[in-house]
Structures are given as C-alpha cells and as structure tokens.
Amino acid sequence: MNAQELLQIADDELILGWRDSEWTGIAPSLEEDVAFSSIAQNEIGHARALYELVSRELGTDADSLAFDRHPSEYRCAALVEQRRMDWAHAIARHFLYETADEIRLAALKQSDDGAVAGLAAKMDREEVYHRLHARMWNDRLQAEPRYEDALVELWPYALGVLAPNQRTALAKRVGREEVDAIERNGHSDELLELREEMTMVRRSVPGATW
Amino acid sequence: MVTEAQVWDALAEIPDPEIPVISLVDLGVIRDVAIENGNVRIEFTPTFLGCPALEVMRDAMANKIRDLGAEPDVQVLLDDSWSTDKITAAGREKLRVSGFAPPAPRGATDLVQLNRAVFRCPYCGSTDTRLENIFGPTPCRSLRYCAACRQPFEQFKTI
Image 1 (cartoon, helix red, strand yellow):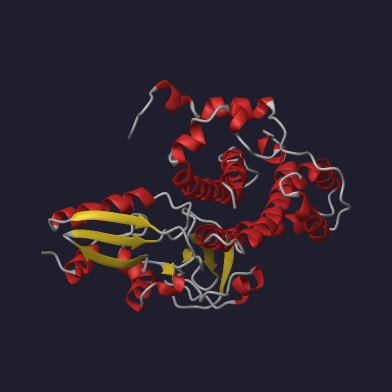
Image 2 (tube, chains in turn yellow, cyan; image 1 turned 90 degrees about the vertical axis):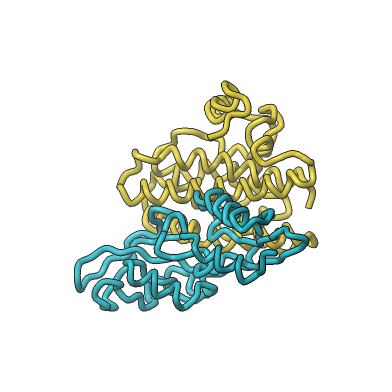
C-alpha cells in the first residue's frame, strides 16, 4: 500500500468527519445530533491514525498532513466534499460511503503491510457501528422518493470513492447499475472553503498549542 | 531502579478520563510494559481511534513514569489487539456499579445481536432494556433504556 493511496482514505475520513460534524446542533432529532457528532469524531480519529501511519513513511506528522498541504494535494473524493445537504442527501451519502468503505477496508485488511492491515482491522471493527446506523436509516427512508432521488444523484460520486476494481462489488452491494464514476480529479469550491475554515487557527497562530 | 510491578501499580492509579471509575489497567488498554536502561516503554491501545481522551491518557502515563524517576516511551498501537473482552472482571464490576452496562462479548456487534443480547440494567438488574441510540457521549458508549425502572443508562460498546 503506498502513501498516496492511504492519504486518499485519510482525506476522505477527515473531510467526511467535518461534514458530519455540521449536523451537530441542527440534526432532525437530538438522538441524531449525538449520532452524527459521534460518527464525525470517530472518522476524524481514523483520519488521524492513517495520517500517523503515512507520516512515518514521509517523515512528517499527522497535523501537517491534515492541515498544511496545498489544497490541490488533498486526495479526497468529491462525495465527501459536498456541503449543507438536506437530511435525505446526508443519509444517502452516509449509506453509500459506509458501504463503499466496508469494501475498501476488507481489501486493506489483506495488506502485506502488517501496520496497514492492523489499522484496517481496528477501523473496520469501529465502522460496524457507523454501518448499523447507516443501514437503519436506509431501511427507514427507502420508500421515500426524496431519498431515492438523493441516492441516484450521489451514486456516481459514491463509485468514485473506490478503486475501479472495487466498484462492481459496491454496485452489487447496494443493488444499482454501475455508471460512470466521478473520479478524484480536482476539488470543488466547497472543499476550498472548508479548508480555509479548518486551518484558520493553524494559519493565524502558527505553532499554537493548547 | 524502577520495576515492572511499580510501573503497573502506578498505571493502575490512572483513571479513564471519560469514565473515571475505571483505571487504564482495568480497561486492559495497556498492552505491555518493558524496562530497559531506566527507560519505561509502554504499549497502549486506544479504545476507539476517535477517543478524545487519547492525548490526556498518554500524558498521564508519561507523568506517572517520570514520577517514578524514569524516562517514559509511550507507544500508541494502531491495531486490533485490544478488545472490550480485555476489560478485567474488576473493571466490569466497577462499570456496573457506576451505571454503565459492561460490554457484550466480542462477536455481538450486529444490530440483531445488540437488540437481542441481554443487557442488565445496572440500576435495578432487570433485563427488560432496549437500545435507544448506538451512539452516546463518547465513541465507546451507547444509550439504553430500562423499561422496568424507567432509567436510561449507558452501555460500553463491544469492540
């Protein structure tokens, strides 16, 4: 597993963590405030662990990878960049992403690199709880046309989360026809905005600790 | 010269920052202690990678080792070697007494199992409890409700 591939996953988890955290305080119910906040915290924890692993190889540290790279160096998928979705889209993204992530983690667990395989196994165990939550909402909303529309809209983005050889498995898992994926090429303005926001303290007071 | 037993005793005094009734040793997250030339190497696993208390725990361990007059080297293991099955019997009892249902054995991690598994209310002992929210105040906790004594309580997630 090379550093760039791990960075893709780390960036996905970091940015999705931030997006999920945008529901804190405004989710449709208090229970969902708690759930999305907790999932967000854990996704960012996964990002931190992955950055840590990559940083050993690149001779840097996790925070530098998370916050100091040029925006064009982020490797996250277009699916996780999108901001301020309605609840139908938020759940559609959550369901599609967690299903894709399960396929990706299953492959990582087979890595020849013991550190990568070990971390993937740990992440996978924790992600079980994210999947349970995603599936529960998918079951609850699946008869809603608005939810189906959101799934259709986000489907090409979800395929772009995975490597081409893993996409058929995702299509099968979610019962959809494979379409052209939206690849990891360039970034939306929404990501640039988010990066400004999440690096604000670090940029304004370099080296700050607390 | 510091001994391994002294290190374990010192670490047993460190409470989990989020659930202070239980120590890091009871939680089973300290995987190994080794002493070499006065340096104390500790291998430690986070409960969940998203645990917000990770750094607090790491600093608390390092400080305890310095108090013993040795130099700490705390290694955070990013693997699957810790499981809630490693929480000691004493630790499980401490959790229960303070209102946390201890985790179910590893394996009980799908929704059907979580709904069917018997979780005893830590307050009244009834098994008439249900899952309210998979997520709670920290990544390692879920929320349950006891229909017998009408008391919500927290459950340590199985990992």
